[in-house]
Length: 303
Image (cartoon, rainbow, N blue to C red; front, side, top):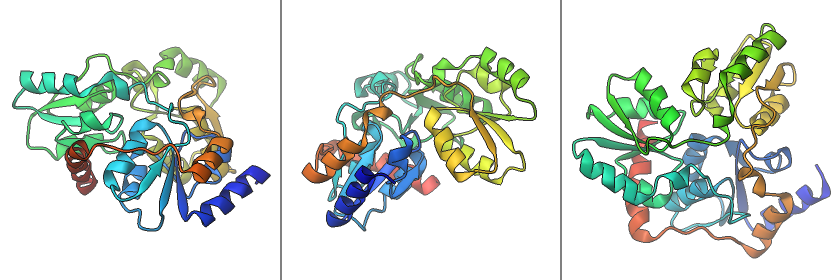
């Protein structure tokens, strides 16, 4: 652990703060986090923050907003206020309202990768880890699902319901980098290697992989699998975590260029600053937060 990391750990203790970090953070931030996880795991942890006065959220905007929604009496800060998820911004609340008017009988399931204003229009939230379970829990046979079209297609193949993607072209720019040739090439280069990809990847990529899993699912699978070699089709720093936690296994990125630049805006210096100055605070207007909280809490009950 380097000197800056030790400074942050001392500051964290002095401030009675905790650091929540997504799996896509760099190694140096992963190492100082009190909790490291995927979107579902972070939602669950954020729903039960009784042990801190200050929460530093090393993730993108919608994640910090979700923590603020679930903890109206806690101070939630994000080290870099420009750490936004482009996909979340592809589905504004007005677009959700438009689809709700067009399909009044449909239930609205929104991916956690949405901003709070959109979440307030949802019946229930989901993550890539529990999307199928959430959709199956609903009595409605017609589901408005957004904003990731590939996750919508993945769910549609698993359930006997009419899944309508909103918008039609929502996507994650990192997972859109993968193409079928990456898997074809990798199978030739690495023998006896399991290929795991995220459901935000294109359907053609999913169909060629051995398993389609959320990041949390990938972590659990690699840990418990008898296989000794894995290719990981998601953001590059999940490989960082997997290698640290499974030193006896061979773990490779399916694509070296799969980097979420938005996640990487957070640095140790910015984390230190967020602790010192308690910035940048993330807040959600109360009327929006109340409605969005209901949708998130419904998901947590299903999960």
